[in-house]
Image 1 (cartoon, rainbow over the protein chains, first blue to last red):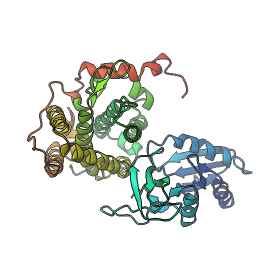
Image 2 (tube, rainbow over the protein chains, first blue to last red):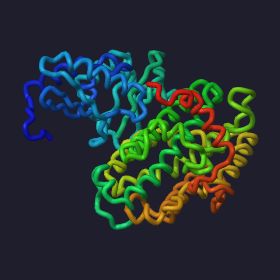
Image 3 (cartoon, rainbow over the protein chains, first blue to last red):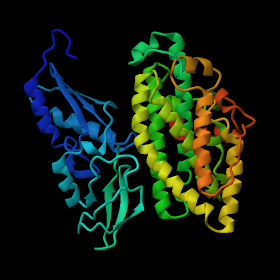
Image 4 (cartoon, chains in turn yellow, orange):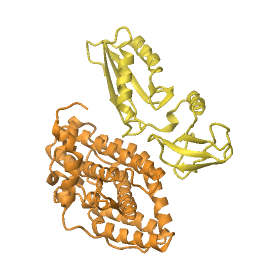
Length: 167
Length: 277
């Protein structure tokens, strides 16, 4: 909440959102943190930008890097001299927060996007990001990053990764 | 759970000394359980049965370490101490983890001739994981809102751990005689310590009265029902009432194995606790 006497800048906040489109998850450089649905709130009070970020995975080592990258990017804006990044857990990040346009970009990077509106008990069916075949198998639920699994396409014989459904 | 109105913020928690103390005591149990088991998990690095398992086990240990960090940071916000210091500078008798999570991975030492017990790793991780699931579900109703929120987040990650250990349990239970024998020996060993998991320590009454988590009896019953169903489905003989170890970890009594683990994990940090990371 803005304190009395502070100035809240709607225009600067819009600038911040635009700049944040250029900050990416270092482990998935093709989509921005905004597209990942990780930016919950941006608020500018005087010359300070406050950014609330929703972590995808609690222990993700990339979080600290993202925090630094956000701060470095937002001070580029005229009128911002300080950036406070805070990780928040309400609402919890889920894979449904990834914006529709980002799903195609994930595919082009060789990562199958997570299913939409996944519910407990649903079967996780993954199509190959290269050839769209549903004839795939999970090789390892756990992959090179906490958010991804390793799969294999039995049709085009490519290994690939998939973002886990987080719900 | 006790009838306690919702406490939304750290500041509000600090205003009631009884509440703050109960919350602190519970957070140490939650943090230390995840921290020490994640450390034991990290000692499997490079030693797991195959490379995919190495990736999986280290991912799960990383998640668990992340959960421990969250709990230590909540303690830091309550003014108990710096999160890194709480993890690395306390002596063994200040730890409140259950004895089950501190036991060595098996014979030998990580650096010299490790002959670790993979069946024990599976059973310990799964039995603890099932208890953690019950505990997180209870924490969703916690009177301390920040704790309920992070628990919701942790559950999204934890469900993948449970799926993973389920696969291993079923496969070993239905594999060769040797595998089955080792699995049963591991269950016997884990079961001797497992009855301590749901204990809430010296301040248990206040923890429950403050509405932080369900009582020991309810946690125990839910966890046993869940675990029994899973063991029986895998065709394993149900071990019945779990035992409790000689030392009482929730009261700060530990085996020498914990002191040894702490000495190793904090070795670098203790050289210069003021260094930036």
